[in-house]
Length: 381
Image 1 (cartoon, rainbow, N blue to C red):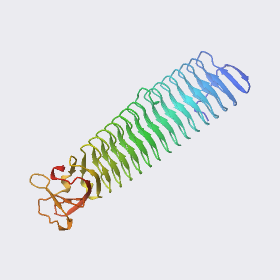
Image 2 (image 1 turned 30 degrees about the vertical axis):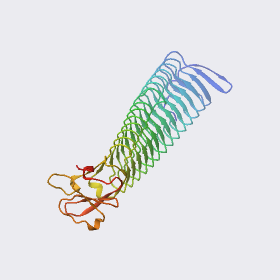
Image 3 (image 1 turned 90 degrees about the horizontal axis):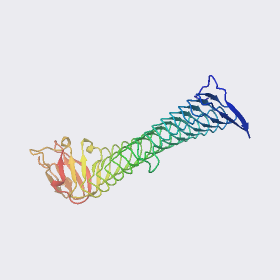
Image 4 (image 1 turned 90 degrees about the vertical axis):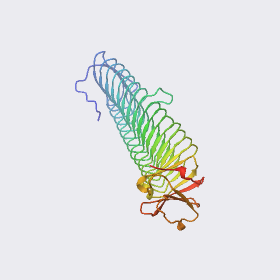
């Protein structure tokens, strides 16, 4: 059933040719009702109300703020100029808003939706939909189904779009502009494009790529793969065994719960492995590794430690001393270490790294591969 209800149909000119009924509106605001067959409806230039009915219909709004419902069938609806309300209805529909601030809804079926120019609202509904916001700051909700959703065309000037995947394995692309992209409940692919984007994977095993811009990325639940891109990104892995790559730029990577792999790439990066046994590769640049109260839950492996890197340890988990400084002791066997009240970091030459707690017990928190650490490589925070 169409969302567009006709209560007072306007008399209009019509004729049928080769199985298609051609209906033309008057220059005034009209209410037009299609037939149960295949219709071609020209709504002309006023604020028209159209229900094309059943059949595979073509409806063109021309000018004015039109409300057009496709009904059943595989329909093509063009709003053209004006702030239009367009609904595909049942079937696999092609709906284009044109110029103006339009509302474009696919409803049931595998629909192709295009907002056109202007700040549009696009809702896919059920089915595997393809939606493009086009020019303007658009809001796109794919609904259920495996949807392909884009805020802007590649190479288009940037606008700040909001794109929601909903349920299903969705593909989201922001384009240029500062976009907000949210994957939803399944295994999604999310690409930010140009601009400083905020991306959320949601539930599922997602693939997220920032491309360029300074992005804020929340991978969410699931075993996610995240690539930051060209600039300085902030990436939160969330729950699950995630793979996080900062790329170029000075990135901040937080693994969250799970056994994560964190790689900084180029730049001076900051890492927090958090809960789980994480593998961390700082890459090039002077990197910072932060170990907080969660350091007691899991042992992280730093695969590319260099003496220009800094390991920061939370003061709440390490033995304090008068100056709040690091006192490092290197041993060949941790079993031969005797707490002395001042040493608060112990490095075993096998690569194991321990902090000494206030009760003089030792706790391993990392395994180092690379340069042998010295006291200047550590800070208490």
